[in-house]
Image (cartoon, rainbow, N blue to C red):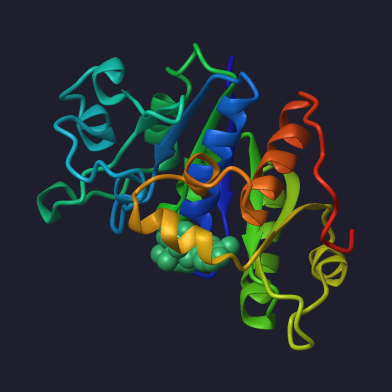
Length: 245
Ligand SMILES: Nc1ncnc2c1ncn2[C@@H]1O[C@H](COP(=O)(O)OP(=O)(O)OP(=O)(O)O)[C@@H](O)[C@H]1O
Ligand SMILES: [Mg+2]
């Protein structure tokens, strides 16, 4: 049975899809079997991050009962599988928790199912979060993102999901950044990882590939590997620590 982990944030644009794409690649590099699922139907872009925006069969077709699960799962060159969402307006729909559950629980041949969720705390995001067993919270080190992440944590608790912890993304180490341990303390959850602001993440996006694959030695990639190691328990030789935790 796969561990079903929703990657969620509350506030949009903090790096959920980046985290899903890169943790999938990092877990795969540690020998884990991963399926990355796009549950963000209204503004899906996991496929765009991975360089394949137009898939013939997508999660919408599975949710509609028009396709079998295995036909909507594709192999990515970074070593993991992906169940994308259709980006066209014609296939907009907002599934409920049970519909997501039906899809997620059909994936039986993976160690991890990483679910990219929609921005905000509307029906679409909450249905995917409720259908997951565990939640990984992504935030930036600023108060607006943290406030929304706090609300998300409350929902996760209400749903009985295990909150794995928070990944603080786009940390610059500047005075205006909230220190990572303070972010974790504010949210009342463990600090699972700290991803620096790294130009290589942008470069990798332009190359439509996870930075872990594109630039494995970049600062961001090293941190993604450490998070993957923490999540899976598979040892990974840690690089020198650059960050204060
Ligand atoms: N660590 C980082 N360093 C530099 N740029 C980053 C980093 N993380 C994310 N970004 C950039 O931030 C932008 C938003 O990232 P992403 O699409 O992953 O956010 P999101 O939370 O999935 O957004 P949405 O809520 O709209 O789905 C992208 O352009 C991405 O390249
Ligand atoms: Mg996204």
